Amino acid sequence: MTNRFLMLLKTRGALTAAEIAQELGMTKEGARLQLLKFTEEGLIKAENESVGVGRPKQFFSLTAQGNAEFPDTHAELTVKLIDIIRSTLGNAALQTVIDVSEQTGKEKYLKELDPFQELEGRIAKLTEIRSREGYMAEYHKDEEGYLLIENHCPICAAATSCQGFCSSELNVFRFVLGEGVTIVRQDHIVSGDRRCAYRISTQSISA
Image (cartoon, rainbow, N blue to C red; front, side, top):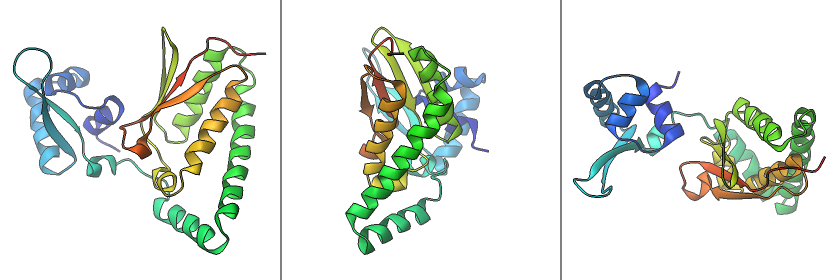
């Protein structure tokens, strides 16, 4: 099981030792000892950052090695298959695979979202599905609407090799949440961000 320190930094991003200690219900000294251990193992890195007036604060975040503790589903095999399709059958064949995957996703998600008529209910169910699939998803409601966050990408290697998969996922989201819903990807793991985040800007959907 992934350590709770790593899980916290994966879902929350960079935090100070005091913030980590508070979140995990332990002393600051205890947290620092664990953070030192993970830093020595190359799983966590520490960086100083100026926050307002006063001395810079030390923030801890995951390294590439730390992120690798969270599985990328069948990464090597998936990338190999993508390369084989692209090199032997061409980009058109690869796009056909993506299109079929997208249609399958639309049908699968829509079946589970159909009982929910209100937008928030559909977002909550979509979040549940994505978490079940390994995306560590969550959503928040704010004055601008909703923010759907995916803290992990279990197909990151495939998405990096062929970003058509990312575009396809966005198409699926737009389809299953209904007409009149605007969805914009604000953060993108493949582009180097810590997470993928989607701004959903309307309060209701068409029946």
